[in-house]
Length: 123
Image 1 (cartoon, rainbow, N blue to C red):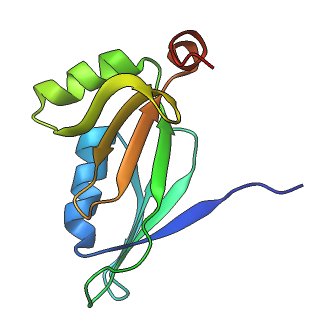
Image 2: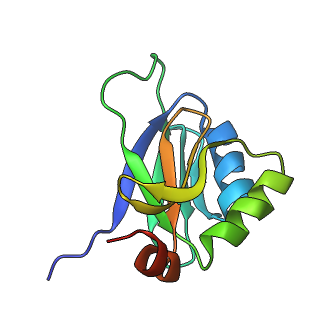
């Protein structure tokens, strides 16, 4: 059996990224290692992202984090009230119905929910 366990994400400032993921998406800190400049954050399902601070400018291909929420429209309104800027508000997009935003390092975050994906994506 294979199970996706964690993701290592290079970031410019691990504390800034930690704070953004905690405040914006409700992740929690699993552990911090100041010596290696790594902070592990975890979602409610136990998936861990290792935020690894890198000295040089982050370059190359970027990944997209896809995060399931209970209600994408409600989460969008909640985050917008907190001043979070979105690339695209909830709408029918190339990948289905959802919303897109970016973290402090420019990684794209796609938010979706099961009901809206099924009823509004047109798939």
